[in-house]
Length: 145
Image (cartoon, rainbow, N blue to C red):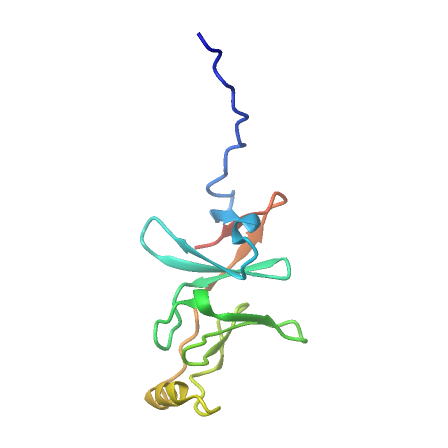
């Protein structure tokens, strides 16, 4: 019969590095977007952010109203700090530390944000859980989960 086709095998993907960081994909997987959602085997959702060649990782949902971080506006400030702002309530987080830089701001002419801000006016800001990230030479992303 016909000769079998031999496919070039991809190099096997390392699932964990020597320090236990999980391989959660490759920078090429972002496809031109700034965010990429990842679901772990245990059901935990994470968000990866690609900003100027750096990758950051956090929990998948905001801490104020559990809004998906996939819709966050990701920016690198002039001082070098990288932030993610939740479009729903305006909460801004540092992607380096998870610190809340702005907690449910009210006003700005947005009635929904004003309402949500008033609901959280007396609650303490809750930091976003962030994770250490390493990028391998081949672009693989390893996260310490």
